[in-house]
Length: 121
Ligand SMILES: CC(=O)c1cc(-c2ccccn2)c2ncccn12
Image (cartoon, rainbow, N blue to C red; front, side, top):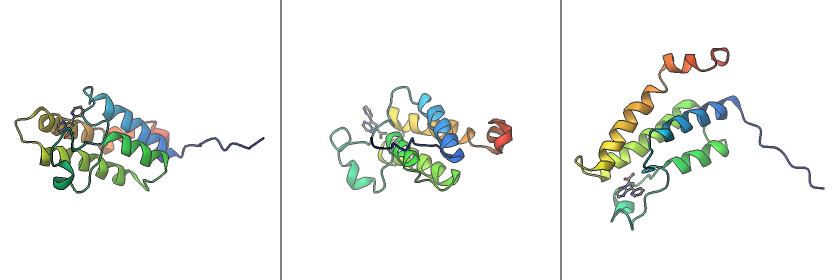
C-alpha cells in the first residue's frame, strides 16, 4: 500500500490557522472568502494588481508558504487594503474591510498573542 504522509502542522501553521478562523468569523457575509471576480466587480483585475482573499491565505498556510507571522499579517492587510482601494468609502465592502482590518490587527497584538497558549510564546 502507498505510505501516506499525514500533514503535520508546524507551530506557526497552527497559530496562523487559529488566527485565520478568528478573522473569518468576523466576515459572516463571506465578502472576503473567495477571490473577487471581474464579473461581480467590473474592472477589478485592472485596478487591483495583487488580489488576496481568505481562501488564498488558507492555501498558503497549508503549503507552509508563510515564513513568519508578519507575512501572514501582510496578506491580511493587503486583502483589506484592496477592498478599500477598489470600493468607494460609502459601500458595504469598504466599510466591512475597514472594520475587519481593525478587528484583525487587534488579534495579533503582542498582548493577544501572549494569551495564546503562553507556553508557546
Ligand atoms: C471584497 C470585495 O471587494 C468584494 C466582495 C464582493 C462580494 C463577495 C461575495 C459575494 C458578493 N460580493 C464584492 N462585490 C462587488 C464589489 C466588491 N466585492
